[in-house]
Length: 344
Image (cartoon, rainbow, N blue to C red; front, side):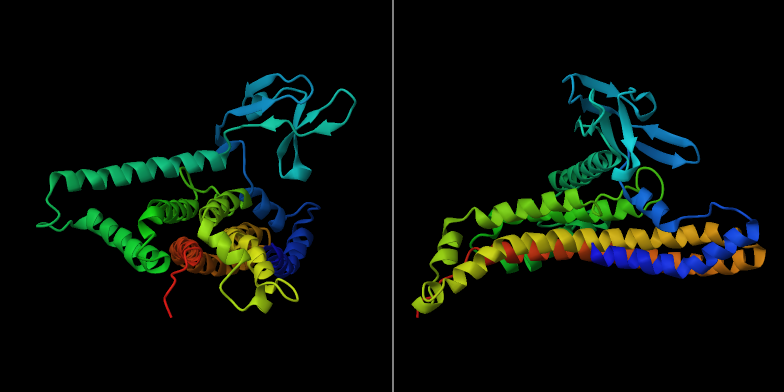
């Protein structure tokens, strides 16, 4: 989070002179607020913006904290007792009878939820199509080509060089389905997030709730293991390290139970959100440049276009790298929970 704030502050400081020049040159009191625009586009929404004033309304499902009644509506037909609180990133709050405000139970189908459904549909379609090829062909005598061959290469690379190598020969089959699912989910989500129009554009892996859930799943798989807990509280080390004068090794291992998934969560969230923030910031600079005249606008547009092309190419690489790193570290943590004992 500190990294993201620092990036946004640096971008704001870089654009502040341009911001002032634009306001002075046009005599306008209100000017472009780049950090606000960036944070608004990175946050979740109750509609899917297409272009201009065109947007797809998404279903809002709320349970009133005052009456307990359910409300089904869209953003434009929101009842009067509910409102969007901009101080809480546009979340829906309810006006209570005593004048206070409270967050209702919100089960709305937001933009991030729709993006996850789209990713799930894409993955199901892709792997059902690939499996159909294997049903119709003999893979022992005929090698797949084209898209099916590329998918086989990617799956076998993650399966053999990451999962099998890190988890170990004895236990890898149990965890391979989860780790492969996580890899392709993060990869496809990252790639769709780079698309500026529907069905992409949602900042799913840049949402701390999504990365928290993925890290929690890995944490559960790591810790549901009797042998792992034995290694935490009574490892095969000298007695003074695990009992006297203080349980040094157990304390370190217990802290590691929470720091490992925390590192998974923050690494994916921070890297993806920072990349989106930089791309959106350079996009805002294009509009900011035109408020400063043709000469300055052309110069800033050329600079922004070059940086946008460069950053999008970098983000294509980052989309794969972050999916690979999350899967690799998850496999490493699971493998460490299954120690291989060797006789002296």
